Image (cartoon, helix red, strand yellow):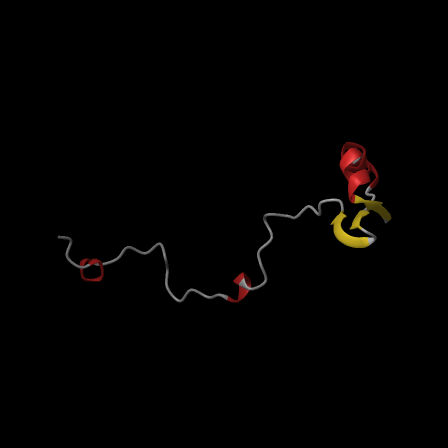
Length: 76
């Protein structure tokens, strides 16, 4: 990880992004020597994976089953 000040990050942003994208390099952007932000490669996620909490939810009825007229109620 390379520390870089804000001014230098502004002037070299395109080059920094290329290094992050191509080499997986990480930058720590600092103001007055104190860390402000971290530029890291984006972690790709699999959108088809379910959240762990969702696997605990159980539906106790068939959501595709048609409702009876009583369940629908009267439509005004």
